[in-house]
Amino acid sequence: MVGGSTVPAEVYRTAREVGQEIALAEAIVVTGGLGGVMEAAAKGAKEKGGTVVGILPGFSKSEANPYVDIPIVTGLGDGRNALIVQTAQALIALPGEYGTLSEIALALKIGKPVVSLGGWEISADIIKAKSPKEAVATALKAIGK
Amino acid sequence: MVGGSTVPAEVYRTAREVGQEIALAEAIVVTGGLGGVMEAAAKGAKEKGGTVVGILPGFSKSEANPYVDIPIVTGLGDGRNALIVQTAQALIALPGEYGTLSEIALALKIGKPVVSLGGWEISADIIKAKSPKEAVATALKAIGK
Amino acid sequence: MVGGSTVPAEVYRTAREVGQEIALAEAIVVTGGLGGVMEAAAKGAKEKGGTVVGILPGFSKSEANPYVDIPIVTGLGDGRNALIVQTAQALIALPGEYGTLSEIALALKIGKPVVSLGGWEISADIIKAKSPKEAVATALKAIGK
Amino acid sequence: MVGGSTVPAEVYRTAREVGQEIALAEAIVVTGGLGGVMEAAAKGAKEKGGTVVGILPGFSKSEANPYVDIPIVTGLGDGRNALIVQTAQALIALPGEYGTLSEIALALKIGKPVVSLGGWEISADIIKAKSPKEAVATALKAIGK
Image (cartoon, rainbow over all chains, first blue to last red; front, side, top):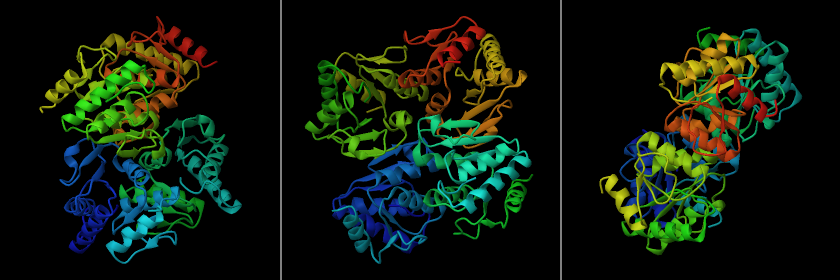
């Protein structure tokens, strides 16, 4: 799951619901481990008993939001975006800025399914979804589950 | 300089002219070191006595195009895109696919000037140029040279 | 946990016991996700209900051994060794070759505790242990648990 | 060339001579771009008209020593050590601490020749040299030049 690190309350709520749906589907939430969409998705997943991986940019696990179970300390800065995309089986993208766009671009480059829930829509290769439930169902279907 | 690894003859010609202009301005060409726009820019730079750095994705310098003076063997795959963007002082973007888009996004994220010469135009933060000469002049001006 | 990717049966057995002890202590096993010591530790941890993170060098989760719960697909090659060391809270080192040595060196560099169970002993900063149980107890003590 | 970032005057002098010899042999000096052995080697190379690549750990080229011609801004922290080793054709190691040891270990792992001039001697695979001249000659011979 990718999206902005500071987002409006509405986007936060949507991200949390996506996290809940992923956990209910017994899938793992993989994010960048920081705030905004990353935190909301993690929080939602924990509310439903899910597992959350946070692939952090810096050199300390203390930068992870409190809902991350498995912090990965990369020290790669924005270079860690490539690891998020490679590790996730599909990308669900919420509204975000250029960091989110770089993740969408990398996912499209390596052929990972990208489902957008109000995020960047710069290519016909991105699948649009209208709700958290639909986004997760679409992503699961795209990876054959 | 970023752009597609396989491009039409017209884009190749433009990239070569950009490389020539960079060399004439006594600046260093930094690219991903492979084919297409990366090769054309490197070729143009060498024609005018310039220096070319190729930040390679794989584990062997043999993947560099023949015009690269300084091959950097990263083994980072697409993760090396972040290094290109961090190392270059400004980004000149020609037409390319999702890899090029990821580089533009990363450059915008960290505040590096992005000059587009027919490439992705997904943000008002990207400066448009109409010719190789104008693109290089604009990039140099943006970094205070 | 670090150590060779192909090891004698005795070292495999020791690594498996270390994995078991880590799981019994309710800690997470972080390894490079491949064979040998990495596989044995993961297998041991799963036998005792533990969780295993595998920080993989390549671009596919299919290279992970079957006991990895959370595969992290870095594509960084040997550069991923730095991520293992940064992510783990302490390093338990079994016999291995130069890759293992590079991990020990990086851990010592950033001040992570290194406990050796028959591995490289190139510094007085490495704490020696005589059994899997002692190695895990020593590592936990070193991180204040 | 690898070695400590803060070293005694004698080691600095030796590193400078190694840099001079590399430049006289018309080879490129590849280092981590910071102080100590990295700076001395760069300084020596520039005194003899050579070219110096500095593969930097941080996010700014301002951390490079003043003798680096081509700063590569990796943002990888200690992970950049793998890039130094992959990019150099052979490693000449002077005295250094654990960072230097990690570079020697990675070079031995991927089969790059390692020539030691008073540095870590943890393997019979490391070739010992007695002077800067001999170290450079040995390294060049090892890579077939």
